[in-house]
Structure formats: structure tokens, C-alpha cells
Length: 120
Image (cartoon, rainbow, N blue to C red; front, side, top):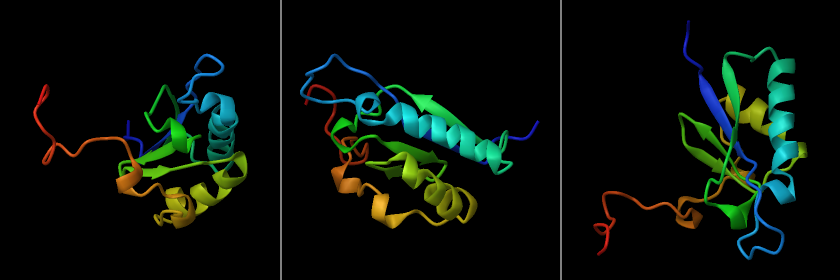
């Protein structure tokens, strides 16, 4: 069996209504995930590119969020109307959709090379 060429993770996390962090599920994450699955299959990319539903990707304020690996390109906010463009330009063409890319400085992850030790 061959490996998948890419994975497309879409956050579908749901939180309690009124949670100040918000959540991707409540703002369209489920619809975006369904659109990726359907449209990748329609384009003959099933078992070549994997559409994955993800729990919290920790970018709630930018959601719905999508991350494409192996490149590690983060997108948000993404709507079902954006899915065709991401598939055509990035998944097939290899070019990130710049208008939807979340810049690294807006992501909540930590760079291990510059991060303080735990508890520091």
C-alpha cells in the first residue's frame, strides 16, 4: 500500500454554547470537513489525499481551521466555498492559498527551539 500524499485536517471541535474561546464546529467546521471529503472523492483523490476530522486544533479564534500536511500549512477561517480552491491550488497544484493562510505569528503553538522549559 502507498502512503497518502497529503492529509487535510479540519477542526470540528464543539464546546458548550457561550464558551469564550468559541469553537470550529459551531462556525461551520462540520460542513467544511464534509465538503473536503466529498470533493476529494469527486476528484478521484480518495486514498491519495486523506480528509481527516480533527478535535481541537487550538486555533479557535481563527476557525474553522484546516491544516494540510506534510507541508503544515494552516488555513482559517475556511468556509465550504473555499474548499475547491484549496484542493485545486494547494492539494493538486502545490501552491498554498495565500488569502486563507494563517501566518505563523498568529498560531498558538510554540517553537521548540525558542521555547522556555516546562514550568519556566
